Image (cartoon, rainbow, N blue to C red):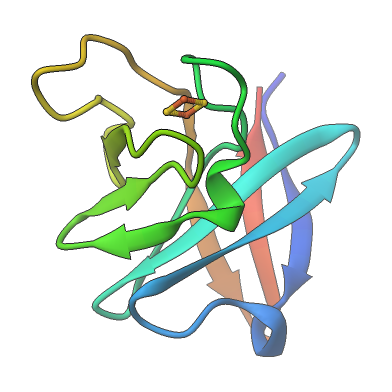
Length: 103
Ligand code: FES
């Protein structure tokens, strides 16, 4: 059953135009901020498991720091020409906490 769990404090969330790595219940997450909107993606790039949370934000995408594949921050779909997708998690801020929904 899906459940909202605390990923990090709201004060630890990335500032607009950046991403961080965070972990909850052994799930590594890339938490990104695109123009003030948070999104949570599977941290591991499907190319060679680069850490997306150590990458950067470019437009509406998170860019992998290893070989620069880019993934739409909201959908997790890779930008062309790559054909791949990472999981995304629903995310919300509640009080001082950033929560994601784990299935
Ligand atoms: S590991 Fe992410 S682009 Fe290669």
